[in-house]
Length: 369
Image 1 (cartoon, rainbow, N blue to C red):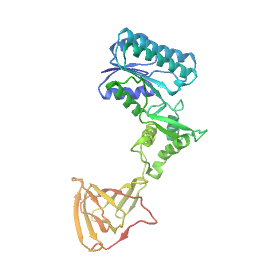
Image 2 (cartoon, rainbow, N blue to C red):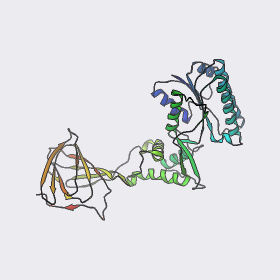
Image 3 (cartoon, rainbow, N blue to C red):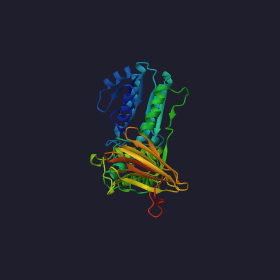
Image 4 (spheres, rainbow, N blue to C red):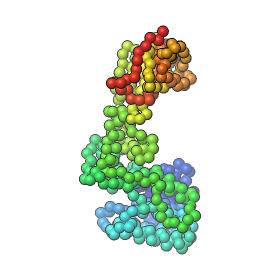
């Protein structure tokens, strides 16, 4: 499929083009400065059009008409010339309902495309998008998410006039998923206006607090639930603004004569991740827990795990090594110890279901014999 993308060098355009190329679409890029002859050629070849090009903060207000209205009219003219019955997506704005120059220009462009769709029976999708955020969005321009992420990631201050102000947001990847679904499976309904299914609401103050939490992960090692929803999208966006010098960070290291212990990451509700080393012939553990549980994975070396039932004194042993990945659980009511029976330093990954509590560690020493 050949897809014409106008505004291909913009924030949304760059993300979209990479997604299209990843699914083997040929992308016809129309960017600022290109001649209308090139636009006409692209329209003649296109199997779908995603019209993103627009101006929202020009130095000269007349640019609203040139970019938002005239360019759209030219697209309509070329589509009519070639009688192209192809799906068209247009990114409008929620301001199209407002009486300002930007909103009026978007409303005018919508009208031209609606007339075109009626005349040629074209599947048209108009998206009146709220604030779109994600990687490559220009900070300190017109996206508060991009501005907060960039400034906080780079140690700069942010300004909040009204922390209670509610923002309506959509994530760039969700927008693109909706676009791709539209052009690959044009809807049969006569509806012209479409929304992104995953639309988020967050206050300005909450947004700032969340992004500051991401910044603090390197110190606290605590991470939020970044695997789904708005937090997932914001975390990915925040990371995209990190300077190269912040791509890594040093973890605190604790050690004794047996080896070292390093905490990697902590969560509020799902425990923590760490690893430890153990010199040949030495032992860790010889304790039990009532409720706390752990999972061990030997990633380098060879270890003997020894278990003892604290009631019956029954013993159980197993050997695990790095060439056969095997998770070993600690079981409440069974004491455990780990012995390095190899010739090299033992390295073991560890997950515990709870954060270590110095006041109530739920850890009790016991004789393992």
